[in-house]
Image (cartoon, rainbow, N blue to C red; front, side, top):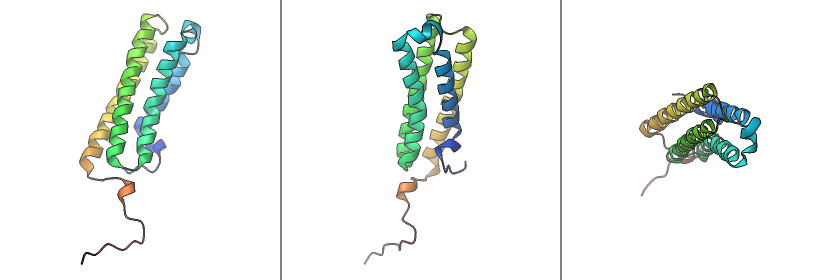
Length: 140
């Protein structure tokens, strides 16, 4: 797995960005747009998934990144549940529900794979690297 230089390079982040777009689109019209509580909660959960991937990445530590990835995955579980509520209220069609559930499932698989890789790789993170041109400490 390649080293990420920017959050925009992470496939899971790209997929959650697509989920956010889809969620905003499906919740912007008809009765769904007027169900302010569900609409806002669904949007917040989708944005939370995307945001937690970014925040974890920017923290610079592998353990923190894994922790934030777990939160992002949990937010996607929230998105799925709220989509079922929207479906039960007939705010989304079966096709829209299925498409969004496939997107969230794909994102959760990507996040799980990234979490597993980060746990196994042994890299502690950028914030643990010594500064450039620093001399190693010697013990007397």
